[in-house]
Length: 273
Image (cartoon, rainbow, N blue to C red; front, side, top):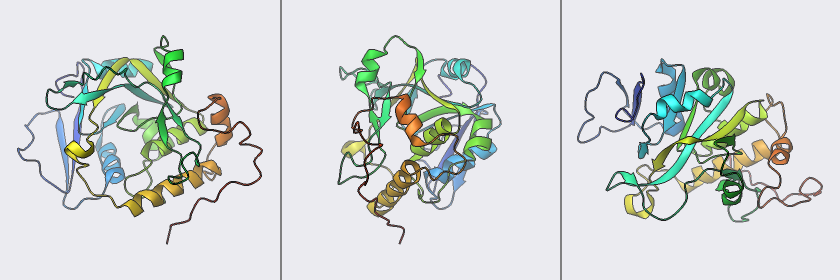
């Protein structure tokens, strides 16, 4: 990020319960938060945002590469109540370059029907290739949801509208962008994909491993809570219900045409205990 920035930035690295080996190189633009014990992703993001001094904040996973000048391109198309997502490529970590896999970059995501996968209930962000092809020439465009490995917004939006990331119900890690995107859209803001710049993200998978531990139970509980919270419109500060968002992007893959008139939905399990 320091090498690819062309403006005045600070980079805040959160070391969540570990020290890197070799250590990070010193730089006057670098600030480090070290936690003696791991507290999780949501707490890490909140602690970094709390000490950020800029007008804008950009969160990214550790395993990402950025386009030249990303830091000056993103603010040009970002209003106070927007969340902006750069175009996403896959990263070749060994070459530190865009992975040459013959695939198009990822520009769009949708929130799936919560019961699209009966064994994996939840509002999951899914890649939306059909929308990408239909709207390929629109450089800054509405985005229903996103993956969460990188997002950009004003610090004002993070502090005063999102009010940070909550661990209530979600736990420490999961459903990050479901909270961010839904609070933004349903609170009267806008989520956009910005194709004028990009980042490349490493899908670690079996080759590299996750890098941190999260139990399946914690993941499932957080996902169920999020689905229940947003599908049944339990956020008291919303201006719109979830149906407004689905209508805005309709037709949305996996959502039944008659979903509003269904008399009964399968229950979302309650795993709080």
